[in-house]
Image (cartoon, rainbow, N blue to C red; front, side):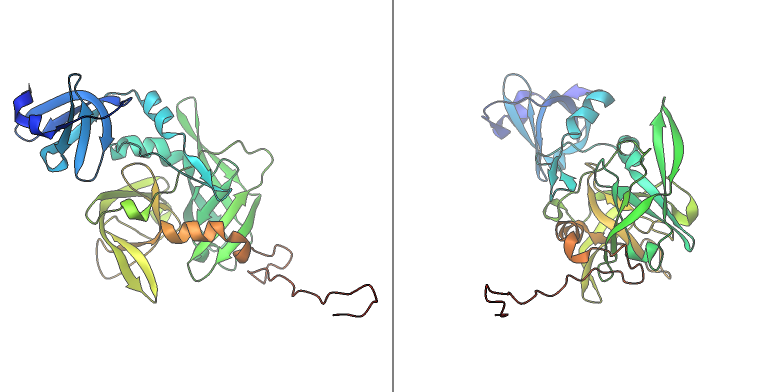
Length: 320
């Protein structure tokens, strides 16, 4: 492996104030490499501090980026998202991309299996308090719901089944459901941040974790085929990531470990034609969850309708 002479990319140099990045090696075309402090990863370029100057390297010239932080340091770096809407998290500052193997290890504990008497699906925690997202069709007409969670204990995964689960909100049309594990013995749950549609690019690598055909914790990889596939008046993400019955309600991740969609269907007569609900719809559902609140006192009615305003009674007792 050889390092790129300064003159080869000196035209790409620019001055930035401050750095504070992580150590990394950029492996380039032609068996060349640059080692330095990774400052930023953008869609078209990578910014790295090599000590004597800061270089901007075209993304097309980069084969791969080898991060030199330890898994513990990487987990600390990406585990500080900000809470939005009082219920879900987003990364306010960009986080580095990583291998799917590393990401699956990091976010896998937040992915769950949703069980009902009628079948099973997948879901994922959006905060530490047990709130999780799945599909409406996974729990449709069901109130007896349990959640299988895989906790890391002494380096091993232990399966726990939580049967005290309440339905918080439902959106039949967007095929989304918000649940909460309310078991008093439950710990704080591992959770995953929600990503942004604005940062998605067609052709980028994505992956899903779920329980296809009941095979829990299955990881599948693909690319984002399109961001705007229209079906029955709704827009969906289309992906080559393998989606099968049991994946429904599970997360579709980008290479930063952020949820960009909720997998919910596939075309049965084709391969590599999976679909996911865009994260934009998920955020809207969560932020306006009161409008979709489930009436736990009347399970036959999936929506809670607020009572109409009553007429105001004045001091004279006459309604105005």
